[in-house]
Length: 141
Image (tube, rainbow, N blue to C red; front, side, top):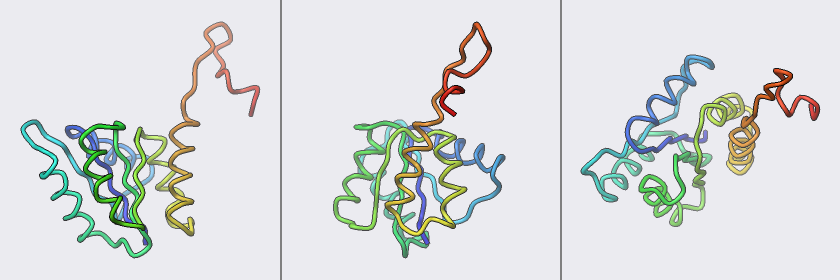
């Protein structure tokens, strides 16, 4: 099974997961890492490593973090550089989580789930066209 970790500044990771579970249902094999004021990179490394030990990661680990270059990303990246079966993606958002939740049981590989996460987060960005009340992407679909 692929383990999922969401790492963010503050409690955003916990709240994103809770909100996504309101829509998709309770999830197993997922953990949250929070980066709190006063903590450093060592605290984050400890949190990530603890979750990696607790989760079932036999098919890999997908870590979704908030910001590229932020401390949650930097700590996860340090671990991922040492682990072949760990991927890190930035820009975690609700659509990304929902796509991962929907696909994790049917996805056959970590690389596929990574691509699903990337596309799910990116493709959910839409703009309302005020004159028509339609989404600008409606014509594409």
